Image 1: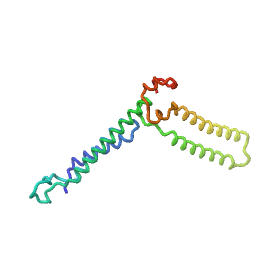
Image 2 (image 1 turned 30 degrees about the vertical axis):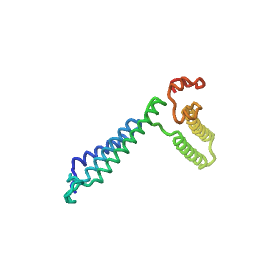
Image 3 (image 1 turned 180 degrees about the vertical axis):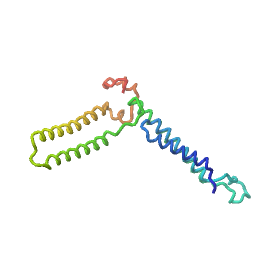
Image 4 (image 1 turned 90 degrees about the horizontal axis):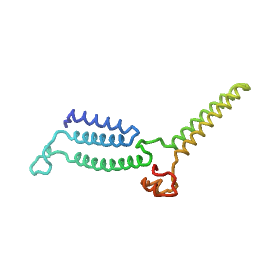
Length: 197
C-alpha cells in the first residue's frame, strides 16, 4: 500500500492544530478544534487506503484493482458524527454566552474547592508538624503559628464567599438548569435579576 506523503503531512498538521485549539478555554475555539481535528482524521483514514483503484461496482474488474470502500464508509460516518458534535457545541456556546456573556469554559467550583481544601489541609499539617517538632515554642513562634493558621482559615473562607457569589441561581429550577430566554427574566416580576440574566 502506498500512502501520499503530502496527504499524511496535511492530516498530521490538521490534527495538531485541532488538538491545540481543543485545549483552549473558549467554546468557539474548541468547536473549531473539533471540526479541524475531525477533518484531519478523515483525511488520514482516506489517505491510508492508498492509491485510487477501479470502482467496486463494475463487473469484470479484478479484486486487486478495486478501491476498498470501508475507509470511505468510516469517513462518511465520522462526518455525520462531527456534524452532530458541532451542533451540540454550538448550542453549548450559545447558552454559555446567553447566561454569562462569554463562551469561555470556567473552572468547576467543586473541583477547585476540593483541591484548595486538600492544599490548605496539607499546609496546616506541615505547619502543625513544624510547630510541634522542636522544643517548647516561644511566644513569637506561637504568634507565628496562630497567624499562619488564621491565614489558612481566611483562605478557605474567601473561597467559600467566591463560590457563594458564583451561584447566581434564580430559584426556578427549570430555568436555571435548562435555561430561559432573557425576555423571560424581564417578564418575571419575582425575579430580581432583570434582563441581564
